Length: 227
Image (cartoon, rainbow, N blue to C red; front, side, top):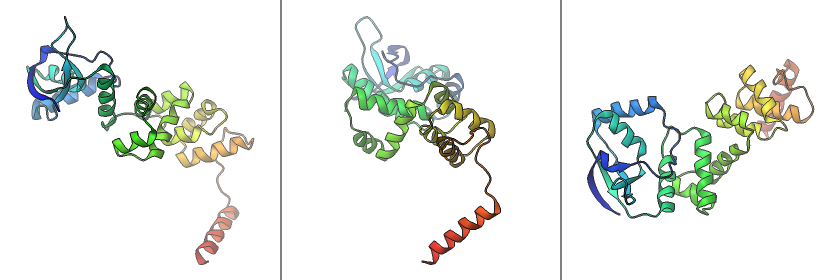
């Protein structure tokens, strides 16, 4: 399992290959404030450092380390484990996926790295992280979107649901303009994609149902319920 030590903060170095999403200044400041109040709740995971460098290299907990520096801490609790480079990256990816603040594209990238670089099946990744296989598969598919649409999903303009709906479109980038401009819901986006696939104009969004069409659907639903 590894020894739990209290390590001077200057004896730690960042991972050789950072797997963490971009560390935003506001997030680090927020975490630093929490650390000042509550301290480090979860120890870092580290491994012995390379010759000539810091005594220990961070495997998991880079955000906590940087925030602790801002908070003025001098020592950090850390579990020391003897790990290879590949094992270190795998552990870091799993820890990142357990965070709640990843955007869908960051989550998808971590899943894909675990699957491709470490030869894990989607089922294994899903089980290890308490997710369904379909969630993992559908999230990874977001990486197939055009760069323009991925940027919209990454910054929160579009949700993961919007992204999955646009994957079925012949031109997701073009339809994304309409979705954003009209503020369409995921369900409306799915309808827009279906209409575009049938050759209908895409610029006006889903057509509002007429009273007749609403009555037809209501009647059909009532008949189904009475069977």
